[in-house]
Image 1 (cartoon, rainbow, N blue to C red):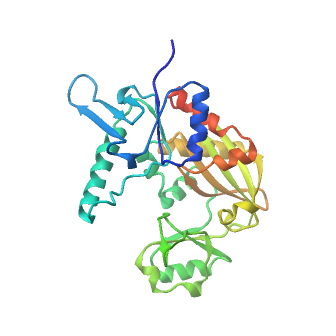
Image 2 (image 1 turned 180 degrees about the vertical axis):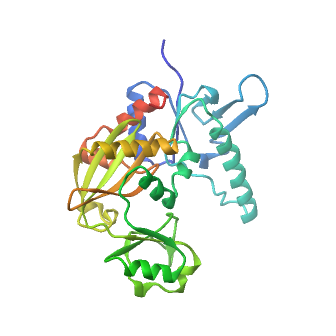
Image 3 (image 1 turned 120 degrees about the vertical axis):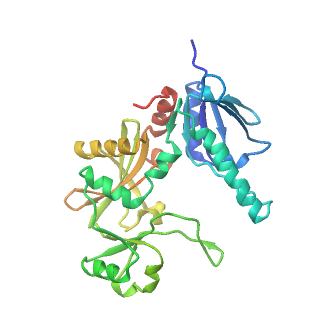
Length: 319
């Protein structure tokens, strides 16, 4: 008997990584319903009932081409959804409408506990705080670079002065423009003389530079671990993808178990980890992106990452 339960894929309109996973699901003949919260209205409708019947929640999600019984969903791939901004409304109405959508549509979806989530958005959010990441990584036995989070300029100068090289990293990526041009935050070197009173306005993250020879991006999907060494010669390899080279590697057993334990700690079933490799071959923790990019790595290495996601979503059960 065939399993007709659908996989829900929540993502933006142009998402090549999601396309790769959906292609693998199609090969398995698994029904897929793709939607984007930004389409709420005529292109996306939700109806949910609570407090009636035996089920805690009953309802439907409808797109122009699909109607899904929410209680019948097999799994949810929460990829890169975009929430509506309601730019056609005045500022107060737009804020109101955006909040109703997040807490209405979002709250309804978050209430689903039958399907497998990859990953549940609330668990992604809990795992996305860098100070928490650093503490959990160290508890699990991973090597963490000396790091300071502070809005005290004197503390910042003292920390920078006690290490040979220090970088500044943003605590959270946010959309940012300067003179109308989008900019992003890289891992940038910082010196004590650059610290002024503006540091007191908000917390900043300062970290001792790892004397690295390469970086690792490690994708975990369920219990499958894909580790790719990235050669760049740059402090932050994300600055120029055209110069990167890749090599598939195996992680030391204790590191692999620590990363799996890390995901278990946050009740995640997938995540993208960044580690640094020093001259002695030791690995240093940098960060976790609970919903990081990996599509370009599959194209560059041939690793079956999208197939691993498709298999996990097809099974609909956390390993």
